[in-house]
Image (cartoon, rainbow, N blue to C red; front, side, top):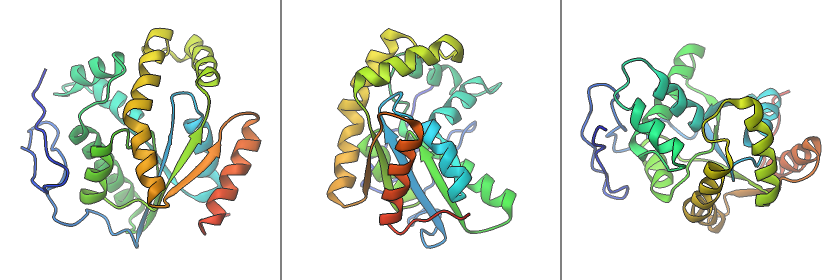
Length: 233
């Protein structure tokens, strides 16, 4: 397993660059201008509906959806990836992949989208990130400050039922009861402090994520509207 350089998110010091996957930018200022690039995080426990609601937001609000989990799974399967096995082991155990890898994958995906669209402005909806406090601080310092965070608030018993049903067809190694329990604990221990931090800064849209999918989306749209974030169509 390759050693991952660690960094104090408040120090501004750059991690060692690896040849296969250059890690997070050493820019003093963020890589993207928040006046041109809008970043909204969507957080919630495993099975809270982040992916489902993201589909609606992309359609109506013109967001480019970036799933930290999907990017990590793609990297773990990429032939020749230096970090593939490490990512696979972390995901299987319900643990959080070192932030430098995740942040760099997100930054690369944002650059790729802007290059593809030949523009300097875009709306990004980042799904399932940041999952730890250091990720939140590091991303906002080196990539782009977020405008707000959508928090899908859902009881564990509801999420567990959804995940077990999904596991029948998803083929994902972590859609089993043992991994699900680990993921719930990881979310409560490490991700809820991120939600609480952003809430203290008045940057959280809290949405009750139970009941009908359409009703949940209606609550979400209402919360965004109250933040002056409106559909593009």
